[in-house]
Length: 255
Ligand SMILES: [Mg+2]
Image (cartoon, rainbow, N blue to C red; front, side, top):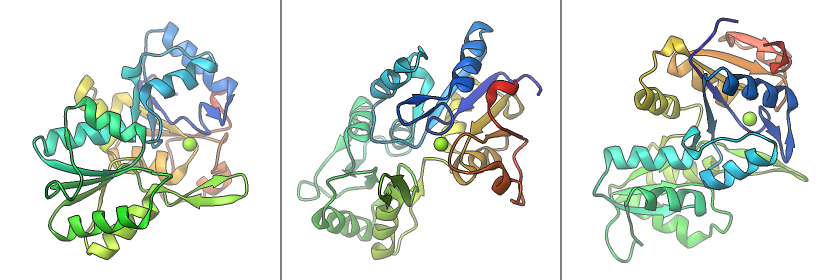
């Protein structure tokens, strides 16, 4: 493998599984840290703050500043700050997205206080009908609809449960509006890293276990990609795709 300047890692299924470290990935990240190469964590998890994700990484022996963690929540806030600075924002979501929006000093309102210019949606495990009504009406009145990520479902112990994308599409369908998504496979998170650090695309690589999010994110952005066979999508399935990753590996111990 050629040497890159910036290694962008997915988290779940790539660096850890649940609470368990994927040791080959941890060793690889230690190696990058020793060689002073740049590494970033790029995750669609919008329910945890960077501090909470930093703690999860510390628990598996990866010490990292929060500035290296790009969650879809954090990047959504950066994106809203960039494009809708003084806007009124109606949000549905948990701690992760709320604290990210607040950290940028963005104006979060309820729909009975003012007319929203933007509706931001991240995963909200207490979502109810009224929140969906408010979001749908706001978007019909002209608010932009932005979702932290498009994940339709994710695996839980008993089976698949609804992801944020399911709710964002629900609101989009009711309001007849096309949402903007920030999380992978949208290339926005890699674009933000590139802008902030001034990398060339060919200096960056996206590493992940999920073809439909991680690998497509890298492909749409236009950088090299590495698929690892340690998570949700097997190498066998990835090799059937028309657009293949630059590299397919069992795990990161080969590097
Ligand atoms: Mg993953």
